Structure formats: C-alpha cells, structure tokens
Image 1 (cartoon, rainbow, N blue to C red):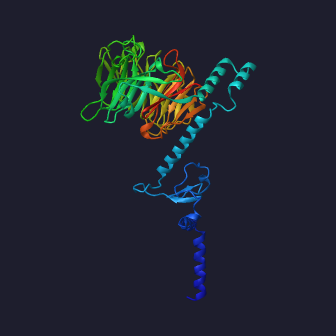
Image 2 (cartoon, rainbow, N blue to C red; image 1 turned 90 degrees about the vertical axis):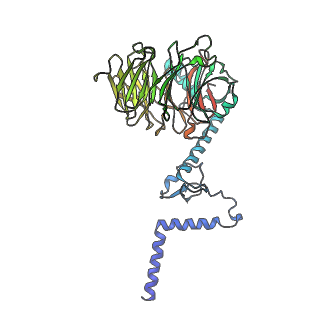
Image 3 (cartoon, rainbow, N blue to C red; image 1 turned 90 degrees about the horizontal axis):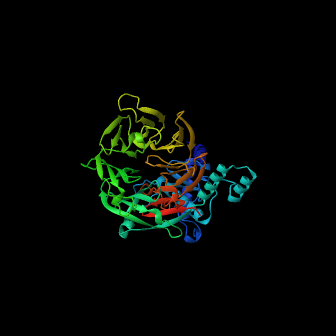
Length: 495
C-alpha cells in the first residue's frame, strides 16, 4: 500500500469518526471531564456535578434521548446513568424523578405560603359580585363560584393534638382518618412502630381558630393485623360503631370487627352507651359498607375474593353472592335497595337486595372500567355513580343510561387503593393521588380547582389521608379540609 492511499483512508476514518453522533458525545464528555479536572480557579463559579432538579422538562425535550444517559438542561450536557446497586449515590432515573418531584413540591408549598390562588382565570370576588348585579350570573352559579373562590384560598395550619400519651403521638403514624356524618368526630387508624394498628377518636368540637387544638381519645384495643377497610356503622344510633375489615396474619384468619365508639372515653358525651363489640370471621375482606337502607336494616356488606357477603349483625344471617373478581369498593344506596360494587377486573355491578342470591336477577346494573375500581360513590339523588380506578381515571356514570357523562382529569394512581371524597353540598370532588397531591375538582364541570402538595416529601408510606366538611366540628363549625400525614394533622380552613 502506498503512502498516499494510506493517508486518504486515515482522513476518511477521521471524518466518519467526527460525523458519528456517538463519538461526538464521547468527545464532548471527555472534554467536559478534562475541564472539570482543571484547577479550582477555572471552575470555581460552576455548580457540582449532580444534575439540577429545579429545571423543567421543556429544555430536555429539544435534545435527543440517549439510552443510559441523562441530559441536564442547565449544564447542557449528558450524564451517564449508573446502576442502582452501587453504594456511591448513583445517578439513576428513579433518583432523578424523586428529586424533580421534591423540587416541585417545595416550590408549590412556597407559592402557597406567599400568595393566594384564584379558582378560575378571570374570577375574583369583585368581578363575580359585579356580574351577579348585572344579571350575568344567577344565584346558584354565583354561590357555586363564590364557594370555589373561598376553596382556592384555604390556608394550611398545623393542628395541635393532645393525648393522655404524648409519646405515642410522636412515634405513631397516621394511616387513615374518617369523619362521621356530623363531622364532629374523626376516627383514626395509626401504624405502630412495633407493627400493627392502633385506633383513636379525635373530638373536633374544640377545633376553633386561631388556636387549632384537638384531643385524641385512644383505646387499648390493638391489633397486629392490617386494616383493609373501615366505615362508620349505625347500630344503636347514628354512627354508634366503627366497622373494621382486618387482614389475616399467619394462622389468624381475617375478620370484620364491629367496634363501639363508646369504648373511647367521652367520644360522644350524652349519647354513647355501652355498645355491642362483636367480630365476624370473614377471611380476606377487601372492602366493607354499612347499610342505612330499610331493606337491609342492621346489615353490612364485605367484598371478598370473588364473593360479596351480606351479614345481619343482630340475627347473624348471611347471604353470599358469587362474582368473577375481587370486590375492592362498595356502597349501599339509601332510597333504592341496591348495593354497588367495584371489582379488580374493572367491572361495577349493583346487587338488588330484594332478590335472593339464586339465579341471575340480582345483578341490576353493570358498568365497566379499564382498570381495577378502587372507589364508588352514589351521587345526584342516586341517579349517578362516581368511580375511580387504578389507572387514575375518575368517571361520572349515568345509572339510567349506563353511560359515562363526565371525566375528572389529573388524578394519579397506578396500583394503590385510594378513595374518593364527594361533597355535593359544596359541589366538589376530592381525591389524593399516589403522587401525594390532593386535588379538588368542581362537580359541575370537572374543572380542576386546586392542587395541594403534601407537607411531607412524597413517598408510598406517606400518602395523605383527608376529610372535608362544610361544618368541621359540628353544626356551628367552619368549612375546611383536614389532612393527616406522618405524625401530623393539618387544617386547611377558609380565610
């Protein structure tokens, strides 16, 4: 081979090397590493080598995504993604996503503390009042928009919880909270450090501004099993008991326990009397619901694996309805003798309580989601049904036409059991997503009114549990939202 042909091949190889984007990336990466190795006076004004988490995805969307690399829009360079099994704080996609989520949460918390938000663009108190005076808004629309405006201006305040055992409050974490019908009591399930669950009732009648103080009445009733579902039960009087579905553990089978609220000291002064404490052996119950329908008086339902079990507390009589999937959500209708059930398969069906469990006539209504149904709520005089699933879809179904008439977008869920909170009097829908954000929609037009970040960093163990009422603490209480997360309780009250 002569010298000229060898030199021409060398030039062609160098030219192809420079045109290949992979080699350009390697060259730029090498140059960046060599610049980073220069003395401190040359790089003193630079940030550290970890990618920025405050920058959005807009800058990164204009550059190509390379497998195994992460592009930092601020530093304008690629970083290699390292495997997650090293012990040197590796840069992984999961850590990048968590840092971005935490940065977004802190930014939203700072914005909420600094300024108040507006429910809808162009609407404020003076504008709505002026439009109402000019006749552009009727009374119902004005009241609805005024409520939305006050809802968007709720301010976060920490609630001081007092107890006979203050040390337990500092260690036990809130699992869930559930307000009773009158919103003057709050039933709590707390995870204990040693494992298991502990229960308490918080009296909300002392929840007054500006000093938000409540007292938790605890009980020695303790279980080392997980609580799958809970609801208030009306046996002696309205909300006289709490119905708990407990998961089985080792050789101990699962059960449904009816716990009297009177076990908690002064939980409801003047009304509570010693109640009936009973337990029903029900293995593998995913959900439960108490019936206030006269056709199923003193009855509760439990959703099991491929079965719905209807139990009469007084007589002990049971009815079993076979299903094709696990029943994860239930609710009784009040005016019509129907029990609505949401399944893991995505099916929603109603059981006609007037029919027996024989034959096929007991399935009154059938609806279908594309993912597991986690919550069902009957609304609008029992003509509609609100349902959410594990794909983050929230749909409003017309039970007369069995068609979806409205969807509420923005909810985040992939696999968690997350409830819905519907408040028709205030015209709002509320749900906590798996990303730990609490979202509030307008029932009227599915407009997302507000997104509330969690006071705690987002994690699977710290998904907030919420309760909303227009009368927190009873008939004279003020509207507001209660949020339990970690060891703390927060109140978002109207300003």
